[in-house]
Image (cartoon, rainbow, N blue to C red; front, side, top):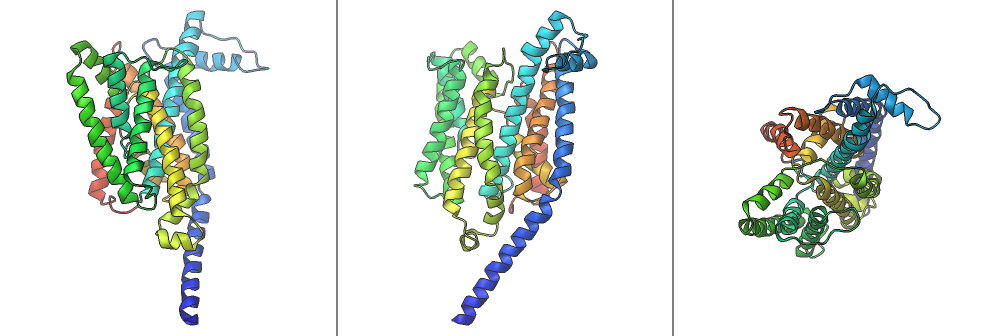
Length: 367
């Protein structure tokens, strides 16, 4: 018995050492990667702010931004009209795109870690179907449930998303230690809300149906900074929770029994991570509509370029996701100008082939 206990303790210690060593080795890379990510994000932001139906000179954008910083006075090369376009249209839309992209990217990395499946995405637990059903109700039947700057459609989408996730968790009967049970609960809720959404669409007029479909395909258009102040707190709070638990996702990869031996509570960790990721996704969906594949593609980009450790994947997915969606949105605004493509259509064009590539590489079975 003593020998067996000694062997078990040695095995647990060995696993702990391996996990710590892997995390330590992975942690050496992000400082350089974070710097590169921030640089790319800044360049994408400048590209996004200066491109659109009304082109703005790059140096004019830079000087105008510097002129609005405290204690810095620079003569802006932009006219009053161009300044209004920059600060009331371009910058709010760019920031919304970065917040949504960062939220979906980080949530995707967290979901892939907690479900131990690299093909998981933020919409697993019925978030998209619940949001779509809420939007259909608000647009089609005139539900007046908005609050503050939250219009009825985003408000209804947020409520629908949260209800779908809560229902998935209820079906799982609190089995947070069983990813498969939660996943099946999400599949059931997605099917139920999708059916309800389809039925509701059939009851709408053609004009109303077009409005709903336009929202479902994803849209980052905004009329000011209100949506930034709505989404920002969710991304900051929920993102902080995910970053604080990113190392726990590495521990979960060795299995629940080993995780418990290392002092981790798998059920509590899954509850916190899934709750934070789902709430952040619901908030993002409420202001942008359904933008597919960002949460799937972005963590894989980080995984392929930097590290397999979730200690790295989760925070870097925020930077890469923000840059990715802000860049894609430029294409949505300019490819068929003066008309505009739904940003979700472009992300689907990018994400679907990438999804097929991941399946072809055979990465769908392990995290």
